[in-house]
Image (cartoon, rainbow, N blue to C red; front, side, top):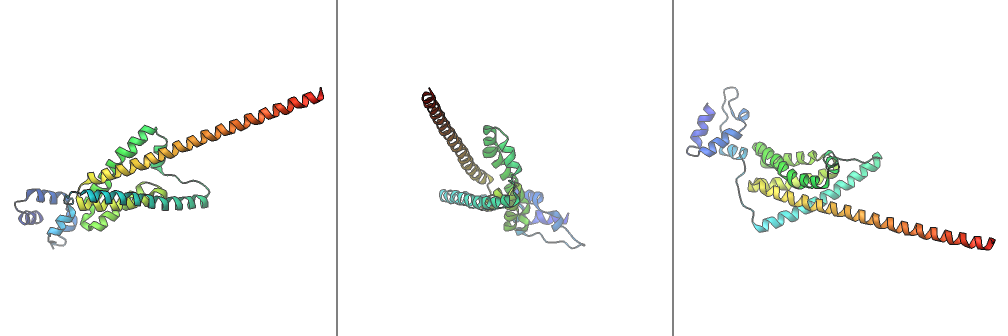
Length: 239
């Protein structure tokens, strides 16, 4: 009761701020301990609520996209190298739960799940939900914790590094803008490009395999014709 009275007196006239503070503050760490009440400061309220909303300028979007792709490719290179090294030492291939589930699905479903559904759910959970509830321990700690969980969520070392790096970048953008739709959009753009590149690589591999099969077929036909010609010549000599 003393905590709520102090809160209402401190933010008198700003009912929205009061209700937000009541909803998000970690009461266990701020209420009285051994009859000693810890004072509620404005910084404590500010760091436990959602970040203040700010718009991103066009220049910020360009920088964010360039940084996102840089983190994606750098992290993927590190993860691929370490994953290949571990697979070589273990003698078997390591795969992830999420990647396996998408690989077993149809191309259309996997595209929708990876490019549309996943960015929305992941940003709501790892950026909005987790960061909002851990900002009381500091924004840097909240962003780092969210990025670490985001990397571990992917379930394999190959994806961990770029997921962790993107988690740091998206977390920074979220705490600076307060708008999760910005990170959702960036997430969709990156996954769409990487998914299309993956589909393009698959198509190129299929085309290369078809061309190789065609060349092998032509080679076999040439060998068969040559063998028939040798057989006919041998028959003529015997006759």
